Image (cartoon, rainbow, N blue to C red; front, top):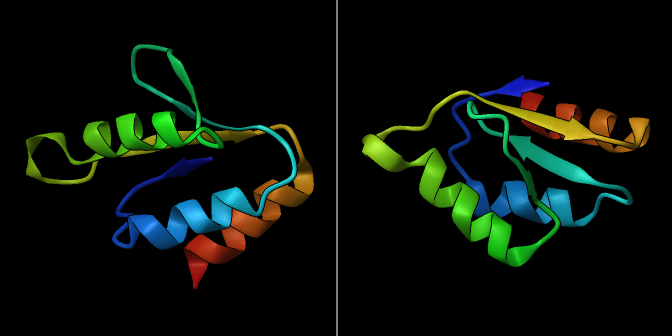
Length: 76
């Protein structure tokens, strides 16, 4: 799923931490960062806010329930 404009990164990562399966950020270069890893969360934050504004990104999950939960969170 494509997402952009995440303003509360801490709350977003709290939601990611509640997921049961893999949650990955796919970069424009095709790299996959495991968002369940705290180190990768820090790296992704640096990518998200490089240049002073958030960029569009793609989030991939391997559990349908996790994708639904993240979509529900992002639409609130």
